[in-house]
Length: 331
Image (cartoon, rainbow, N blue to C red):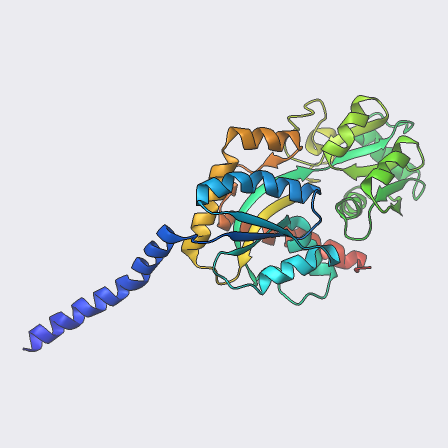
């Protein structure tokens, strides 16, 4: 009788232990059962919105459900991202954003109602866009080393156009000064387009900007391009050297995009979403469209939730001390 009861207990214990795994399997097979909302914390028609729509069109087919993109603007993306942080963690409300801003920079310059690390579950890194180091056509330096020499010989003479404190160009400019010991002024603009026009006109001296914004003017000879802030040359502009090749090693800066879910979203749901993203990024049509948009897709091994988590933390470790040392605050 004792042996029988013990056997029954062991069988019950094994069965109970298997229940969570079985539940995960059932959920993974059934999710999603209704439309998914993806919050894009910027305006419709902007770069992030366009990229989101390219990738979600393919994800709809992979997941077998409609995906609704909702543009929630305000506070440099914080309103939309905050909404995702507070959403039910069931896989039906997600975020797609310029995560170098929303999940790195904003955490250092805003008093947020959520934690950019602990209130989200990473899904996947998607794409990144390095910057080009540019100068006006009349800049006397013919290469990046020469530019650095000129800037150091003429401290606080040059001006760099950027769109405000904490913008990619502003942070890259601070890092550039830190690594080279050069000094220049920052000129604030309402838009990158306005700054580009002043660079072409010779009214400012420098810009750090995404390649798709600048390459047409570079090819026309209206401005100079010295290097790309990445480890590899751009497929769309293979003649422009990397910063390593141009003499400023490890000066890396990029705008990058990722998918996030609220903290507590079940692991099997995250895996299902990640598989949909990975499959989408492998599609030749999607890859061609991303290339047209000037976006570099992260390698397959970097498309995991773990890789996104590590990338975010490495970016925070790199940029937060720079932001805090410079005293950058939200305006």
